[in-house]
Image (cartoon, rainbow, N blue to C red; front, side, top):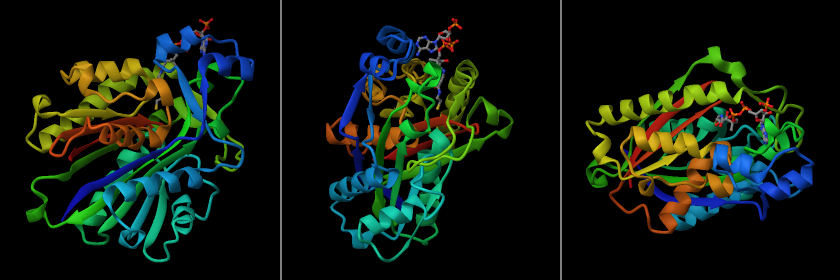
Length: 323
Ligand code: COA
């Protein structure tokens, strides 16, 4: 079996907050130019009061199903990557199942911080290849605005809220025409757990922990580890840099994204960038970028798409897909 990316979808909360507005609203000692020069971020979306990860995720999931031309009866499993679940349990995946009116199949959440979507794609691919599920919704959904220390200008300016989803449809390999998820390459190294972590319980419905980050330390790991994961994925499939159609990277920082483009010998026009408008939406950033680039016609059928992410754990990884 092969897992085809049959549909993509994204959802952003209505309110978009610019750097200047954020500084004024939260009384932070920061400037638009400091944030934009170091990160490329110009604005981010912030969820409304009471809007949770399952609310955002359900909307993104419906958009992905609509693009796939799939009904909810095709959904066998729901995998949600999130660091801001509605609550410890039920899983946000099962909350979303309820919101979509699905009463069969199964769902669970997966925690790998900003790498969550890449991890979830790897797990979903395995479920499909082993015949445990045929239609799988993979959703990244985050309400980071509820787990930020709004007095810490070093972290709170970097993140935003949003959700993205893909609907994967299993088809027999002989009918896939080489399309679908090719492979996922997942990594973790717990020795670096403290350089990017949440210092307590987290939840999109009210938690006690907030994001703590040693930004420079994270930066040092990012490009080397991401480039190694992408090269590992390409080599596993007998492919090289010249085969890449699109890079859809995790959107944490434009400088990391540009450095990755250079490492992979890709011009910036072949890199999907949303960090300027969305900031870092953690597990939601890749599926949000996919949703944008499939809707505006950049990503076309047959294109080789590289997805990569790094996040708290440290966790990192890369997935290759032929659209
Ligand atoms: N506005 C203005 N000044 C700020 C600021 C802000 N929002 N945030 C930090 N500063 C200040 C610091 O207080 C420090 O001031 P000081 O020199 O007087 O002490 C100065 O800017 C430099 O801080 P530093 O943290 O060393 O900046 P940096 O150049 O490393 O940039 C990041 C900070 C976060 C942009 C950068 O480290 C980064 O992008 N790291 C990777 C983070 C990331 O991608 N995380 C997510 C991974 S999933």
